[in-house]
Length: 224
Picture (cartoon, rainbow, N blue to C red):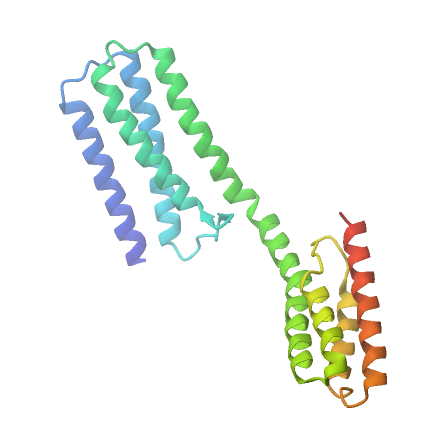
């Protein structure tokens, strides 16, 4: 609650300073002036809302590509304030349509990124999660295969190294259902750990693992 109150107070002070500077300095109150004023006030109000939302314990985690909505709003507000400082002294000479065009472009770009942080975050998180589910087990299995290659007899080292490379470079696709292949590979690698002393059995297991990798790659490629 204290953090929320502090954030809200800081935003109110900034809004007050903005209004004092805009209306006390000798700017010509033309149509262009009011356009610049309106866009800048809008940016400050959006920033106030997101600042207070972030300070609140009920604020949602709104992120898109790991860029929080608060950061997008902060950049937009800073750029809008700079544009305001540059354009206001020339408000009497600057045509209103040019002011609307410039400031609308700034607002439009910021709005697109804000909407993406609000509405696309769940989809991005789902894709990232699915990507981890598909990709990371292969890395772990490749590491285990490398360890087996280091501990294996000379006749098996090359085969296990090749298997490790096949696992490491097996493609990933969040849409692919590779759970069965992944589970089969994990079981084969686990069985290989106790079969290094039996080259014939180990070679059969390596062949089985390579077959599962090929099947997994086929499933992934078909889902693209």
